[in-house]
Length: 272
Image 1 (cartoon, helix red, strand yellow):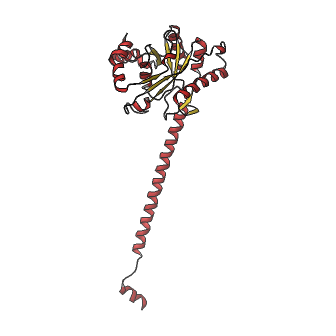
Image 2 (tube, rainbow, N blue to C red):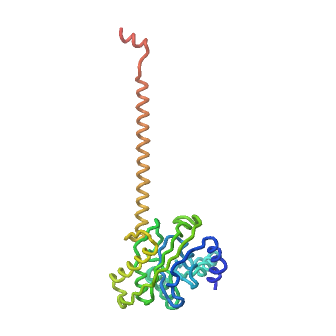
Image 3 (cartoon, rainbow, N blue to C red):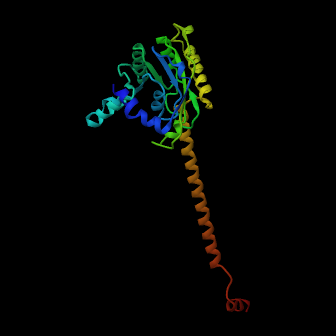
């Protein structure tokens, strides 16, 4: 109930009024029944704007910590995230990834729409990165269609590292459902899982127009951070070298001043 209150009364109307999001291909999303919405991930605002364009509820998984924080703050946090269409990762699994899939399977078994970001984390530079195979495993285990989604402009509304950027009109594009029933029974074949995931990422790339990078987003972030640190160290080293050179030049100039020309009297005494 709180989800619909936020969507149609508290938050949704404000977002529609200010940002006026565009939507394309919403007819590809079924009116009833389960489906996986596999989207690119440019901003934390993605999970606000994509569900806003559909009449149905879209559920995502979120860190369990959002639902277990004690006190008044924790109560409000639980209310907000559950009301915004998020459920905690099932911690009964061996890993967080397995727990997320367990929660997702439960949502799909209830006939709901489940939203997932195959990249696993937000893109730090606007490019589309390699998808993780959890979306493929989920599709094969549940037998539900995968609908590729491209959300654009949210990285302007809320750029990486910032809470808010600028007002623009985000766009949400839904592609045609992808059916992977031809791979039934092969959910443990890693080559099949990779092939399915790559097919999904290709459709997302086609919808979004993003440049594709065959590298996991998390690894790309780590490499970018490392390169930034190395650039800063090189800049500091170059600055220190310049300062040392300037100090040496100043010292040499001071030495030249002490050994400079003598007075006329001194010159005459030296000549005699």
